[in-house]
Length: 288
Length: 238
Ligand SMILES: Nc1ncnc2c1ncn2[C@@H]1O[C@H](COP(=O)(O)OP(=O)(O)OP(=O)(O)O)[C@@H](O)[C@H]1O
Ligand SMILES: [Mg+2]
Image (cartoon, rainbow over all chains, first blue to last red; front, top):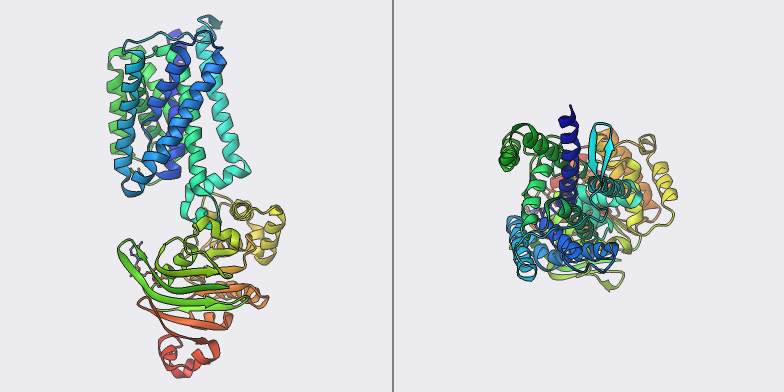
């Protein structure tokens, strides 16, 4: 029983981090049909900016700079590379984002070195006993911050302005015809996905420590999570990513921690074969 | 008010409309009729900027808007009721109307929603319903209502009656007829010539991407080509 509760909590924490990236995927995918695999690398970049050096600068300031950097990379990469390419060939743009994430990782490796660096959580390494459960302060931070971000996203999307975004998701050309500045709105959504990715990087680094290629793994697992729920809806993608985090924790806890990656990609294959729109998905098929 | 001059419009390398000129005057209702594939929808897409003209110009109240992006044309007062309605299926009826009003910077969104509901009482009864679950006729009303929520100067309609039961299109037709009578300019693409002629005062017949006949409704009614093609022979005409 204790193991079970521990695994649920642990799975929820990693699941929330995956879900931050998955939310970014879903926001961009529903708006443009594009999957931005570089969100993981943006998370990595934000992690390095926050934790690698600048110890004398207050944490909050480093975190804000890190998130701004992720937002800038998000928006510029869309405007400069992906937008034009995706109009011609969506698959090429998706592969390009993968390539770009490798480039980002190499650049960080050149600057900061390839050796994993520890990252100290802003809330320290304390633990809290909640009944049978012993949970770290950092895990609580992860849960609180991601819950706040998801709540913010839900509030914005269900607001009046959010109705315009949803209209654009459902029929972009019609929204454009009615006068919605869809290009500008897409840029705002890229910025939002950058905030989520940056937060994911800042939250994940103290758990996994910093390494230049941490983003690649994060990007892939979050993608499988988003597909598991359904990439066509933000809510489904978030729920799918959290479920995948839990599955991963149970698998590691009850079966073997060494086969996690196999589990994740096993899930991926099963979903693609049985239900490509995701377990919770409504759209008929994945468009990529 | 709207002048399309020598327009060439297509899709990538495919040219669909060649050297087409049409105009709609201030407060005038004009129809565009022609066989399937004639290029009527493509022409409207050119007017809205959804397809770029490869030659020719579109001007709006003496201003050249050929290169103006689509999303800036709604603010000028051009509103489209597209072929196939294209309501936002997962938004409610009211949200559909609000999005349209807000997209042109309306400050009196609620008043506009009420205005549309007064025009289409059926929509008023279904305000909170998801648009995708409306019947075809109701969706067409919503598509028109959504355009009206923008308080346009020109209402561009692609296939008003398509797929609607006679009772419903008579109803919808009556609404558009009243709007036109009250001075709203209309550019109407419509397969049903009787309906088109009952709404508009002038019209164009298109075929293979060109205007082959143009004139006032009174003259078109007497034209043999028009009668053979659209008015079901000589007896049924008038
Ligand atoms: N997206 C597209 N790409 C390439 N060709 C297209 C595209 N859409 C339409 N066409 C072609 O353009 C021509 C004119 O189409 P358009 O839709 O303008 O005709 P229409 O007069 O509106 O016909 P209908 O009465 O069937 O609606 C057709 O031959 C069609 O095949
Ligand atoms: Mg058509």
